[in-house]
Length: 136
Length: 111
Image 1: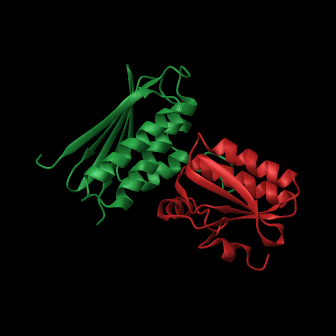
Image 2: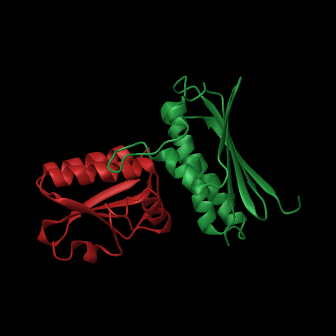
Image 3: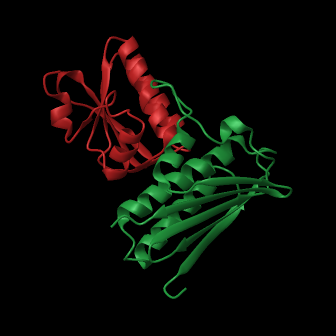
C-alpha cells in the first residue's frame, strides 16, 4: 500500500531491550509526522507492557528472542511482537488487577489501549499482534 | 532514569523522576521512596514533570510508595504528569487514588 512503512527491532528479551523499543517508537514519531502523538504513545504503552511481560516471564529466562515490527498505515498502526519462548500461561495473557495491587495491571493496560490485540501460540514461539486505529 | 530528591517546605520530600518509569527504573523508585520514609519523611510528592513514560511497573512503584508513606502516617502525591501518564492512570482508575496535581505547589498546598 502506498505510504506504508515498517520499522523493526529485535534481540534477546532482557530489560535492556525495552530501550530499543522506546527508540524505535521515537524514530517513528520523528519520521511519520502524520501519526498523532497520542496514538503512537498508546502503541508504545502497549508494546512496552507486552514486551516487559516477556522479559519478566518469558521462558527459558534470559534466552527468549523477540522481534518487533511496527507498520505505519494511513489509518492505523499495526505492531507484531514475535518471540521464541514457551507459551505463556493463560493468566499472563489477559489480566485485571485489584485496585491497590502493586502489580498485575500490564496486560489490562495493553488491552485497553489497543483495538484488536491478539495472541497466538505456535510451535516455534508466540505472536502478539497489536492494532491501533488512528483517532484523529 | 535519574531520580533526585529534595526537601520542600513543611519537610515534604519531593522526588523527581527524570526519564522513563518502566520495569528497569521502577525498583529504584521503590527503594528511593523506602529510604525517604525511613529517613523520617513520609509526606512525599513525586514530581513527574520530566517523566516521559510510565508503565505498570512504574505504577506499581508509585502504589507501593503510597502504601508505605501512609503506613508511616504520611501520604504520597504526584505532580505534573504528562498525557501518557495521565491516560495510564485513568485507564487503571488509579487517578482516584493517585490524584494528579498540575504543579508541585498545588500538591504540597495545605500539607
